[in-house]
Length: 172
Image 1 (tube, rainbow, N blue to C red):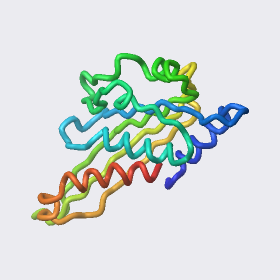
Image 2: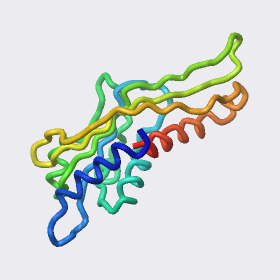
Image 3: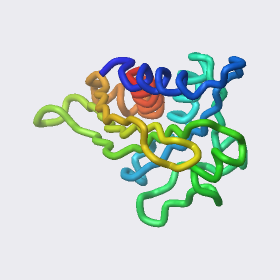
């Protein structure tokens, strides 16, 4: 759903904007609930989502920038900032909390013998009220990369995974 959830989030946040037209502030939390060793970058995804939301006129508070804590953690023993997303939002005066969670990451080969690689990622995106933590809206999206030859993939894997993160943010 291209631009679907971002449109919903922007509309929902516009409702909570103050009458004197101050910029609405949201706390952004990105989590990795799978693929602990896949090489995907939660920081890249966070930066891409920050750019998308701030490009729509919102102040975006990212825990990585605020407390210097890398959000890229595994599903087992995932290390999150020392405060909950709601506490973070309240602490910085945010009106909303946007969470993005990587639910699935697939690295597939195509052909037998393998001739190409293809990547896909599934994200859950949610907007919650900063005071209560209650979800206001949310959606899941799945993004696939183009197919890359095995040689291309070996030479450019990090770049291709970064492109996948940015494509996922573009579809939000």
